[in-house]
Image 1 (cartoon, rainbow, N blue to C red):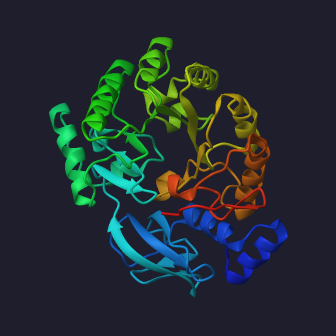
Image 2 (spheres, rainbow, N blue to C red):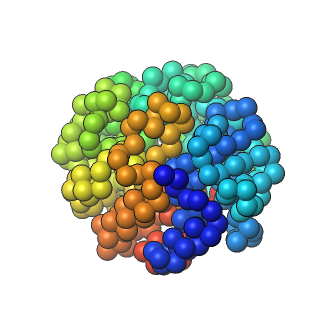
Length: 356
Protein backbone atom coordinates (compact mmCIF):
# COMPACT_ATOMS: atom_id res chain seq x y z
CA UNK A 1 0.00 0.00 0.00
CA UNK A 2 1.34 3.45 -0.89
CA UNK A 3 1.10 6.35 1.53
CA UNK A 4 -0.39 8.59 -1.21
CA UNK A 5 -1.27 7.51 -4.74
CA UNK A 6 -1.67 10.91 -6.44
CA UNK A 7 -2.45 14.60 -5.94
CA UNK A 8 -6.12 13.71 -6.32
CA UNK A 9 -5.76 11.13 -3.52
CA UNK A 10 -3.99 13.76 -1.38
CA UNK A 11 -6.84 16.25 -1.83
CA UNK A 12 -9.41 13.57 -1.10
CA UNK A 13 -7.67 12.54 2.17
CA UNK A 14 -7.30 16.18 3.24
CA UNK A 15 -11.02 16.79 2.71
CA UNK A 16 -12.06 13.62 4.54
CA UNK A 17 -9.90 14.44 7.56
CA UNK A 18 -10.47 18.20 7.45
CA UNK A 19 -6.71 18.85 7.44
CA UNK A 20 -4.89 21.20 5.08
CA UNK A 21 -3.36 19.20 2.20
CA UNK A 22 0.16 20.58 2.80
CA UNK A 23 0.38 18.90 6.22
CA UNK A 24 -0.90 15.62 4.78
CA UNK A 25 1.68 15.82 1.99
CA UNK A 26 4.56 16.56 4.39
CA UNK A 27 3.64 13.66 6.69
CA UNK A 28 3.53 11.31 3.71
CA UNK A 29 6.79 12.69 2.31
CA UNK A 30 8.67 12.25 5.59
CA UNK A 31 7.28 8.75 6.05
CA UNK A 32 7.91 7.64 2.45
CA UNK A 33 11.17 9.35 1.54
CA UNK A 34 11.67 9.87 -2.18
CA UNK A 35 13.06 8.34 -5.33
CA UNK A 36 15.89 10.47 -6.64
CA UNK A 37 18.65 10.54 -9.24
CA UNK A 38 20.84 12.15 -6.55
CA UNK A 39 23.43 9.67 -5.34
CA UNK A 40 23.23 10.42 -1.59
CA UNK A 41 21.10 8.40 0.86
CA UNK A 42 20.02 11.49 2.76
CA UNK A 43 19.88 15.21 1.87
CA UNK A 44 18.75 18.47 3.43
CA UNK A 45 17.11 21.11 1.28
CA UNK A 46 14.57 23.92 1.04
CA UNK A 47 11.15 23.19 -0.41
CA UNK A 48 8.54 25.65 -1.65
CA UNK A 49 5.20 23.90 -2.07
CA UNK A 50 3.29 25.02 -5.15
CA UNK A 51 0.23 25.61 -2.95
CA UNK A 52 2.19 27.90 -0.54
CA UNK A 53 5.11 29.26 -2.58
CA UNK A 54 5.74 32.19 -0.20
CA UNK A 55 6.66 29.87 2.69
CA UNK A 56 10.04 28.13 2.31
CA UNK A 57 10.26 24.89 4.30
CA UNK A 58 13.41 23.11 5.40
CA UNK A 59 13.46 19.30 5.14
CA UNK A 60 15.89 16.44 5.68
CA UNK A 61 14.85 13.41 3.67
CA UNK A 62 15.89 9.86 2.91
CA UNK A 63 16.41 9.37 -0.82
CA UNK A 64 16.79 6.20 -2.87
CA UNK A 65 13.39 4.88 -1.73
CA UNK A 66 12.33 3.21 -4.97
CA UNK A 67 8.89 2.33 -3.57
CA UNK A 68 8.05 5.96 -2.72
CA UNK A 69 5.29 7.81 -4.59
CA UNK A 70 7.48 10.94 -4.38
CA UNK A 71 10.36 11.83 -6.69
CA UNK A 72 12.88 14.58 -6.01
CA UNK A 73 15.66 16.07 -8.13
CA UNK A 74 17.71 19.31 -7.90
CA UNK A 75 14.73 21.38 -9.07
CA UNK A 76 11.40 19.94 -8.04
CA UNK A 77 9.35 17.51 -5.99
CA UNK A 78 6.74 15.35 -7.74
CA UNK A 79 3.96 13.11 -6.43
CA UNK A 80 3.57 10.25 -8.91
CA UNK A 81 4.76 12.45 -11.76
CA UNK A 82 2.82 15.59 -10.84
CA UNK A 83 4.86 18.58 -9.62
CA UNK A 84 3.95 19.70 -6.09
CA UNK A 85 6.93 21.86 -5.11
CA UNK A 86 10.26 23.47 -6.00
CA UNK A 87 13.55 22.37 -4.47
CA UNK A 88 16.52 24.58 -3.66
CA UNK A 89 19.78 24.54 -1.70
CA UNK A 90 20.33 20.77 -1.65
CA UNK A 91 23.24 19.65 0.54
CA UNK A 92 24.51 16.40 1.99
CA UNK A 93 23.15 15.76 5.49
CA UNK A 94 26.48 14.98 7.09
CA UNK A 95 27.19 15.47 10.78
CA UNK A 96 28.39 19.06 10.95
CA UNK A 97 29.74 20.90 13.99
CA UNK A 98 27.03 23.51 14.17
CA UNK A 99 24.08 24.97 12.28
CA UNK A 100 21.38 27.62 12.71
CA UNK A 101 17.62 27.30 12.99
CA UNK A 102 14.97 30.04 13.13
CA UNK A 103 17.28 32.49 11.35
CA UNK A 104 20.18 32.95 13.76
CA UNK A 105 18.14 32.74 16.96
CA UNK A 106 18.95 29.09 17.68
CA UNK A 107 22.33 27.43 17.32
CA UNK A 108 22.64 23.64 17.33
CA UNK A 109 26.01 22.12 18.27
CA UNK A 110 27.21 18.58 17.61
CA UNK A 111 30.10 19.38 19.91
CA UNK A 112 30.88 15.92 21.20
CA UNK A 113 31.61 13.98 17.99
CA UNK A 114 28.12 12.90 17.01
CA UNK A 115 29.40 10.59 14.29
CA UNK A 116 31.09 8.32 16.84
CA UNK A 117 27.71 7.34 18.24
CA UNK A 118 26.67 3.82 17.31
CA UNK A 119 23.13 5.11 17.49
CA UNK A 120 19.65 3.64 17.43
CA UNK A 121 18.21 1.77 14.47
CA UNK A 122 16.11 4.73 13.28
CA UNK A 123 19.06 7.13 13.27
CA UNK A 124 20.81 7.88 9.96
CA UNK A 125 24.13 8.59 11.72
CA UNK A 126 25.60 5.21 10.89
CA UNK A 127 24.86 5.80 7.18
CA UNK A 128 26.67 9.11 7.00
CA UNK A 129 30.14 10.38 6.40
CA UNK A 130 31.13 12.67 9.23
CA UNK A 131 32.65 16.14 9.43
CA UNK A 132 32.43 16.62 13.17
CA UNK A 133 35.74 16.26 15.05
CA UNK A 134 35.23 16.63 18.77
CA UNK A 135 35.67 20.22 19.93
CA UNK A 136 38.09 20.47 22.84
CA UNK A 137 36.97 22.70 25.71
CA UNK A 138 39.71 25.21 24.86
CA UNK A 139 38.38 25.48 21.29
CA UNK A 140 34.70 25.91 22.12
CA UNK A 141 34.82 29.62 22.82
CA UNK A 142 36.88 30.27 19.69
CA UNK A 143 34.57 28.13 17.59
CA UNK A 144 31.49 30.05 18.78
CA UNK A 145 33.26 33.33 18.09
CA UNK A 146 34.16 32.22 14.57
CA UNK A 147 30.58 31.04 13.98
CA UNK A 148 29.28 34.46 15.00
CA UNK A 149 31.75 36.26 12.74
CA UNK A 150 30.92 33.99 9.77
CA UNK A 151 27.24 34.81 10.27
CA UNK A 152 27.86 38.59 10.30
CA UNK A 153 27.41 38.94 14.06
CA UNK A 154 29.78 40.74 16.41
CA UNK A 155 29.01 38.23 19.18
CA UNK A 156 26.31 35.76 20.19
CA UNK A 157 24.24 38.15 22.31
CA UNK A 158 21.20 37.89 19.97
CA UNK A 159 21.17 34.08 20.14
CA UNK A 160 18.24 32.82 22.21
CA UNK A 161 19.17 29.12 22.46
CA UNK A 162 22.28 26.98 22.09
CA UNK A 163 21.34 23.31 21.68
CA UNK A 164 23.78 20.50 22.42
CA UNK A 165 22.55 17.65 20.22
CA UNK A 166 24.68 14.53 20.40
CA UNK A 167 24.45 10.85 21.19
CA UNK A 168 27.89 10.35 22.66
CA UNK A 169 27.64 10.93 26.41
CA UNK A 170 27.65 7.55 28.10
CA UNK A 171 27.38 8.97 31.62
CA UNK A 172 25.61 11.85 33.28
CA UNK A 173 28.74 13.42 34.80
CA UNK A 174 30.49 13.55 31.39
CA UNK A 175 27.48 15.31 29.91
CA UNK A 176 27.37 17.84 32.75
CA UNK A 177 31.11 18.57 32.42
CA UNK A 178 30.61 19.31 28.72
CA UNK A 179 27.50 21.41 29.32
CA UNK A 180 29.41 23.54 31.84
CA UNK A 181 32.09 24.10 29.17
CA UNK A 182 29.42 25.10 26.62
CA UNK A 183 27.86 27.58 29.09
CA UNK A 184 31.30 29.09 29.76
CA UNK A 185 31.93 29.43 26.00
CA UNK A 186 28.48 31.00 25.53
CA UNK A 187 29.24 33.54 28.28
CA UNK A 188 32.62 34.35 26.73
CA UNK A 189 30.79 35.23 23.51
CA UNK A 190 28.10 37.38 25.12
CA UNK A 191 25.33 34.77 25.02
CA UNK A 192 23.01 34.59 28.03
CA UNK A 193 20.40 32.47 26.24
CA UNK A 194 19.02 29.06 27.08
CA UNK A 195 21.34 26.06 27.13
CA UNK A 196 19.31 23.21 25.58
CA UNK A 197 20.33 19.56 25.90
CA UNK A 198 18.91 16.54 24.03
CA UNK A 199 19.80 13.36 25.90
CA UNK A 200 18.71 10.35 27.93
CA UNK A 201 21.62 10.42 30.41
CA UNK A 202 20.58 13.42 32.54
CA UNK A 203 18.10 11.94 35.05
CA UNK A 204 19.28 12.07 38.70
CA UNK A 205 18.41 14.53 41.46
CA UNK A 206 22.06 15.69 41.65
CA UNK A 207 22.25 15.93 37.88
CA UNK A 208 19.19 18.15 37.77
CA UNK A 209 20.66 20.34 40.51
CA UNK A 210 23.78 20.80 38.40
CA UNK A 211 21.73 21.50 35.26
CA UNK A 212 19.63 24.08 37.10
CA UNK A 213 22.91 25.79 38.00
CA UNK A 214 23.50 26.34 34.26
CA UNK A 215 20.18 28.19 33.92
CA UNK A 216 18.37 29.04 31.81
CA UNK A 217 18.34 25.34 30.93
CA UNK A 218 16.08 23.21 28.71
CA UNK A 219 16.09 19.41 28.85
CA UNK A 220 14.69 17.39 25.95
CA UNK A 221 14.61 13.78 27.08
CA UNK A 222 15.08 11.34 24.19
CA UNK A 223 12.19 8.95 24.82
CA UNK A 224 11.79 7.84 21.15
CA UNK A 225 9.47 4.84 21.66
CA UNK A 226 7.92 2.59 24.32
CA UNK A 227 7.65 -0.88 22.77
CA UNK A 228 10.60 -2.94 21.49
CA UNK A 229 12.99 -0.50 23.17
CA UNK A 230 15.82 -3.02 23.50
CA UNK A 231 15.62 -3.94 19.82
CA UNK A 232 15.42 -0.34 18.57
CA UNK A 233 17.47 1.81 20.95
CA UNK A 234 21.07 1.84 22.03
CA UNK A 235 21.55 0.58 25.59
CA UNK A 236 21.88 3.94 27.37
CA UNK A 237 18.40 4.87 26.09
CA UNK A 238 16.82 1.42 26.21
CA UNK A 239 17.47 0.88 29.92
CA UNK A 240 15.26 3.86 30.87
CA UNK A 241 11.65 2.89 31.55
CA UNK A 242 8.77 5.25 30.73
CA UNK A 243 8.22 5.76 34.48
CA UNK A 244 11.89 6.73 34.95
CA UNK A 245 11.60 9.19 32.07
CA UNK A 246 8.60 10.97 33.55
CA UNK A 247 10.30 11.00 36.96
CA UNK A 248 13.37 12.65 35.41
CA UNK A 249 11.26 15.28 33.63
CA UNK A 250 9.37 15.90 36.88
CA UNK A 251 12.67 16.52 38.69
CA UNK A 252 13.71 18.97 36.00
CA UNK A 253 10.36 20.79 36.05
CA UNK A 254 10.53 21.17 39.84
CA UNK A 255 13.83 23.02 39.43
CA UNK A 256 12.49 25.48 36.85
CA UNK A 257 14.09 23.68 33.91
CA UNK A 258 12.15 23.78 30.62
CA UNK A 259 11.11 20.22 29.75
CA UNK A 260 10.00 18.22 26.73
CA UNK A 261 10.94 15.01 24.94
CA UNK A 262 11.54 13.43 21.54
CA UNK A 263 9.26 10.70 20.24
CA UNK A 264 9.32 8.84 16.90
CA UNK A 265 5.84 8.46 15.40
CA UNK A 266 5.50 5.12 13.63
CA UNK A 267 7.43 2.76 15.92
CA UNK A 268 4.70 2.05 18.50
CA UNK A 269 1.07 1.00 18.02
CA UNK A 270 -1.18 4.01 18.65
CA UNK A 271 -2.77 2.49 21.79
CA UNK A 272 0.62 1.86 23.44
CA UNK A 273 1.85 5.32 22.49
CA UNK A 274 -1.16 7.12 23.95
CA UNK A 275 -1.15 4.98 27.10
CA UNK A 276 2.40 6.11 27.97
CA UNK A 277 2.36 9.60 26.49
CA UNK A 278 -0.52 10.70 28.70
CA UNK A 279 1.85 10.36 31.69
CA UNK A 280 4.27 12.81 30.03
CA UNK A 281 1.71 15.64 29.71
CA UNK A 282 1.98 16.93 33.34
CA UNK A 283 5.82 17.04 33.27
CA UNK A 284 6.17 18.71 29.84
CA UNK A 285 6.44 22.51 29.71
CA UNK A 286 7.10 23.11 25.99
CA UNK A 287 5.76 21.22 22.98
CA UNK A 288 7.39 17.77 22.53
CA UNK A 289 9.37 16.90 19.41
CA UNK A 290 7.21 14.31 17.67
CA UNK A 291 9.01 13.10 14.56
CA UNK A 292 7.61 11.00 11.73
CA UNK A 293 9.67 7.81 11.41
CA UNK A 294 11.97 7.93 8.40
CA UNK A 295 13.11 4.51 7.17
CA UNK A 296 16.24 4.91 5.05
CA UNK A 297 16.31 1.40 3.68
CA UNK A 298 14.43 -1.91 3.68
CA UNK A 299 16.15 -2.98 6.92
CA UNK A 300 14.73 0.06 8.73
CA UNK A 301 11.26 -0.65 7.30
CA UNK A 302 11.12 -3.72 9.56
CA UNK A 303 10.73 -1.51 12.63
CA UNK A 304 7.57 0.27 11.42
CA UNK A 305 4.56 -0.60 13.53
CA UNK A 306 1.91 -2.51 11.53
CA UNK A 307 -0.50 -0.17 9.75
CA UNK A 308 1.81 2.85 9.68
CA UNK A 309 2.46 2.41 5.95
CA UNK A 310 -0.95 4.09 5.43
CA UNK A 311 -1.55 7.86 5.66
CA UNK A 312 -4.74 7.22 7.69
CA UNK A 313 -2.64 5.67 10.48
CA UNK A 314 -0.53 8.84 10.70
CA UNK A 315 -3.55 11.12 10.70
CA UNK A 316 -5.18 9.05 13.46
CA UNK A 317 -1.98 9.35 15.50
CA UNK A 318 -1.80 13.10 14.79
CA UNK A 319 -5.36 13.53 16.06
CA UNK A 320 -4.59 11.46 19.20
CA UNK A 321 -1.57 13.65 19.97
CA UNK A 322 -3.63 16.80 19.48
CA UNK A 323 -6.19 15.47 21.97
CA UNK A 324 -3.40 14.81 24.50
CA UNK A 325 -1.42 18.03 24.16
CA UNK A 326 -3.98 20.48 22.73
CA UNK A 327 -5.45 21.28 26.17
CA UNK A 328 -1.98 22.32 27.45
CA UNK A 329 -1.95 25.34 25.12
CA UNK A 330 1.47 24.27 23.79
CA UNK A 331 2.00 24.35 20.02
CA UNK A 332 4.57 22.80 17.64
CA UNK A 333 6.97 24.85 15.48
CA UNK A 334 8.25 23.44 12.20
CA UNK A 335 11.66 25.12 12.50
CA UNK A 336 12.30 23.07 15.66
CA UNK A 337 11.51 19.77 13.97
CA UNK A 338 11.55 19.14 10.21
CA UNK A 339 9.82 15.75 10.58
CA UNK A 340 6.85 17.04 12.55
CA UNK A 341 3.30 15.77 11.92
CA UNK A 342 2.34 19.48 11.98
CA UNK A 343 3.55 22.32 9.78
CA UNK A 344 0.76 24.76 8.96
CA UNK A 345 -2.01 23.69 11.37
CA UNK A 346 -2.43 22.08 14.79
CA UNK A 347 -5.84 20.92 16.05
CA UNK A 348 -7.51 23.06 13.41
CA UNK A 349 -5.55 26.22 14.29
CA UNK A 350 -3.20 27.93 11.85
CA UNK A 351 0.41 27.84 13.08
CA UNK A 352 2.41 31.03 12.63
CA UNK A 353 6.15 31.60 12.79
CA UNK A 354 9.30 30.59 10.95
CA UNK A 355 9.50 27.36 8.94
CA UNK A 356 13.29 27.37 8.47
